[in-house]
Length: 208
Image (cartoon, rainbow, N blue to C red; front, side):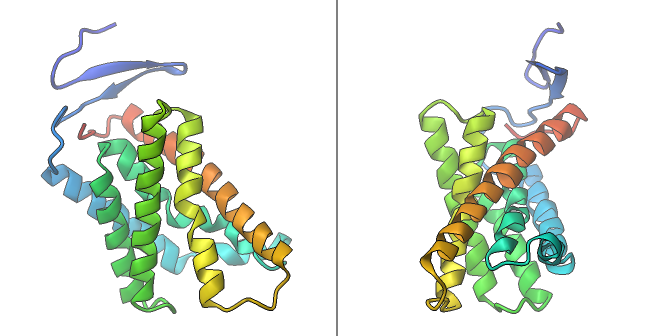
């Protein structure tokens, strides 16, 4: 194994070794690279969330009420990726702000409210990562999964209340919220962690 230094280190994973560049290791301040990553990833998320109708794909095989929550995690995965590359929770908020602004500019049906929703998702994801770190699960699949589920969950009751779906049976509410949490676990957490590992393994510079 190569000797570690300040510019480059190698982390041994089960699938092999990958390079972690760590351009600003142990530096908690935001760097230009942090801002660049947050903006680029946020813009990518805004474009994909606005232009690709993932919800229609779900309705093909699950047309029932609340089924679109099964794919809702794709709105938040961008925040988990940036966190994996930087380990800075501030970057989560910057990424989600960039994403929300772009969705608003693309004419999202929720208008300015979509910016608030993105910031809310980012806040709860950051809180989820904070809690997982406190119990020593910050880098495990379990920790990322729970944090992802936590980050994606709260938008479901928010939208259902805003849409005034009081006439629906309570079981549909519970089912929709379960789908949101499961989507957060699988897409935001597990998939987000896998994408992060792949990017670092490919040599993408980290900022931690």
